[in-house]
Length: 447
Image 1 (tube, rainbow, N blue to C red):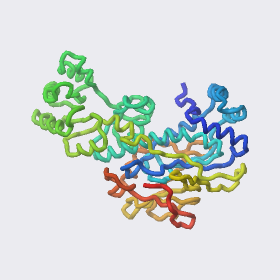
Image 2 (cartoon, rainbow, N blue to C red; image 1 turned 45 degrees about the vertical axis):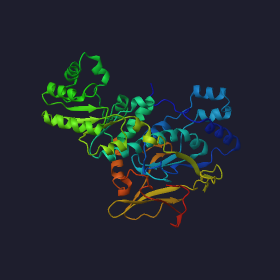
Image 3 (cartoon, rainbow, N blue to C red; image 1 turned 60 degrees about the vertical axis):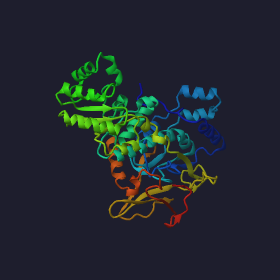
Image 4 (cartoon, rainbow, N blue to C red; image 1 turned 135 degrees about the horizontal axis):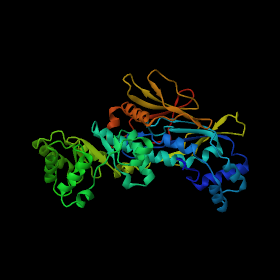
C-alpha cells in the first residue's frame, strides 16, 4: 500500500468550481502568488510556532486525482469534462518558499508563499491550511509547555483525545517544540519519535492486589519502569513499589488529586525510604499554566494529553491563504501585479512578501521585517526567514525532524524576555511592512 495515498479530495468544493470557471474564462493558467499567514495571534499568545512543513511537502507531492475521484466529481457535477481532464493530469509544477519548521511566526508573517498557475495553486488551499493550522496550533501550545517545564521532560499522551491521524500529527508537532517522547506508536514508527508507556489503572484493577500488579509489571519491564501509584492509596503504593525493588524503582506516576501536594508528600516518602533516585512523573489534564504552577514541586516530568492536542484553548492558528499577486495574462514572463482584499476586518496586503527577523547585538529579536515586492535591506544581525521548499514542482526543503527541533530551540532563544510571559499582552516583537524604498507601511493585521 502507498505510504502517501492520494490527497486530492481533502479539499473544499469551491476550489474545484473556481478552476472550472477559470478554465472557461481563460484565466486558470495565469501565474499567481498565494500567501499563508495569520492576521493575529490567539488571545494571550506572544508568539506562534510553524509546524507541518514536512507533512505539507509530502501531501503536495501525493496530490493526485485518480479515476475514482474524478468519477465522483463528475457524478456530482462539481466539475465538467474539461475540468476533469485538467485534474486527471494535475501535478504541482510551481515553487514554494516558507518559514523553516520550528521557527516562530507573528501577525502578518508570510509563513508560506506559493507561486504557480492559479489552477495549480488555488486547489492546495484547504490542504495546506488544514495541515498548518493544526500542526502549528499544537506546536505553539507545546512550546509554551516546554518553556514552563524548563529542563523537565514533557511526554505527549493525547492520542485518545483526538482523531487517530491528528494524534500522529500532534506527536510530531509536539516533538518539534521540545517534547521528549510520545505514547503514540504510529508516531514513533512514522517519524522516529521516542515512545514511552507502561500501565494504566486497569492493569492494577485486573490483579487481585496492587502488589500482584506491580510484581507482574516489574517482572516484565524491569526495575526502571514507572509504577502508577494512585489507584487506591498513594502512600501504600509507594511503599510497596520501593519494597519490591529494594529502593531501585525507576519512577512513580501520579494521575489525580492535588499534584503539588501529592508530589511533595511522595518525594519525602521516597527519600525517607531510601529511594532518592526514584523519579516522580505527573499527569492529569495538564496544560502550560499547571506546569508553571508545578515549577516549585519535586516533579521530574510531565505527561500532557488533552490540552496539547487541542492547542490548549487555541485549536487553530486562524491561518488564511490569500492571493496577493497575479499576472495579467498567460504569458509566463508577464509581470506580477499586487492584488488585495479591502473588506472590513478581513483586508489583506497585496504583493509578494520577503521576511527577515531583526536581531540585536546579543542575537535577541527586535522585529519582524516584511518587504513588499523585494527583500528588506539586511544588516549583519538580521536573519532571513524564507527557505526554498519546492522548486518547479520538486521538493527541495525536506529535512530531518531533529533539524526542525533544533531550529525551534534556537529561534525561541531569540525571544526578548516579554516573549516568555504567560500573561496576556502584545506579540513578543512587532511586525513592520516595508515598501521598496524601505518606508514603513500601515499594517492591516492586529497583534
